[in-house]
Length: 197
Image (cartoon, rainbow, N blue to C red; front, side, top):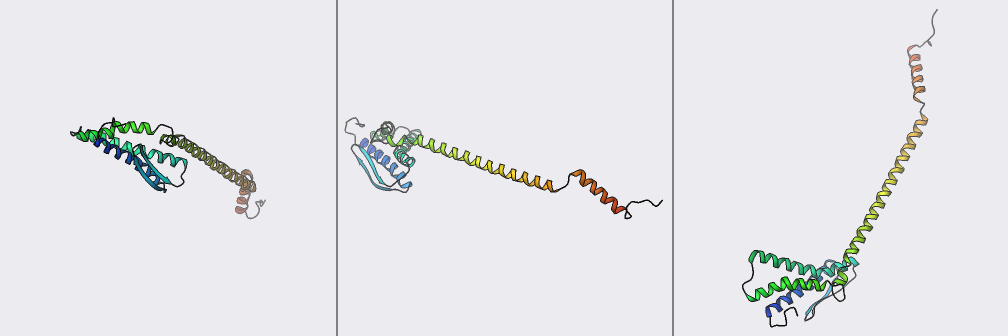
């Protein structure tokens, strides 16, 4: 279909390689998340990466995006090649470049349709899942901040109570000053301050 139903061996080889890289993109994230890749298949209708293991919904979505990420890297590499080298001069090179650019973009768009068995069905939920996770972390962080503020407030109240208790044990400053003054006079006048008339 993508080759226009014509005899195009270079296109077929490029297309086979692109589908293989797409499936290897899935396999990369499967392995990255510590799961087991059972098989990577490429056939006339596309490809399939079969794996086993249990992952979170977010990781399952990332695995679904893995194929598209691999294709996008191919596309970027092809665009860089065009900037540096220019158009290929051979027909085979032009076919492979066409696979890496135009056909690649069509495959990405098709693969991201949100219907089974295409990757889009499991890929698109990534963004709401990430938002929910961010929101939950934000709420937990706010809750932790409030907990810390409450603990600080309790500590300040305890410190204020302790200062108030300590102040209650000491006499008021006026009385303390009067007592100090009487004690100083008594010290300076050992006879009790009487006159000798």
